Length: 242
Image (cartoon, rainbow, N blue to C red):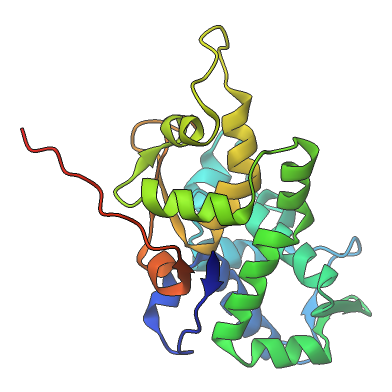
């Protein structure tokens, strides 16, 4: 069982959601641009706004350091270089919350209504990312990822309370990895379809101190997870005292 709780609009715990920070940024841009946010000829956000978004939002793993000085060093970022902004732009269009008009991105009537309520914005977009967004849904369906959200959320709720490595969490769901395989594809599938939208929404934290490989990253439920999600009661975890 899982349910979603309602939070007050001004609850500071929602500030911890990277996705909501993107939405807050876009909401501010709409307020600054009554005729709509200027777009390129291809329909993307302009580079000036993308640069401002990167520095303002501070999206984990998508900051100035990772985008400009990462594996593929770039001097100027286009929208697709900032993947969370790129994906959320697409999601909002598919939800018909925004639409392009004469070279600008405008809020629709439904979009204006949504963005007027901060919690509802977070709630609706988070549920869309988890259940409907093509980016993550196709990752689950194309790879035939075993499980459903009831199972994933409740198992993660128990296993990730104190933090768990990607490899260990994958084996909790799907059993030990094949020792003959250098790379466990199940970890990539679980990350792409389940863990990534949870991290983006701020419900899971992702610690790369032990390495950037998915199997080495540590995932832990956040305070927002506990406040926003209502899940099955769990037995307390045993502490081994040496």
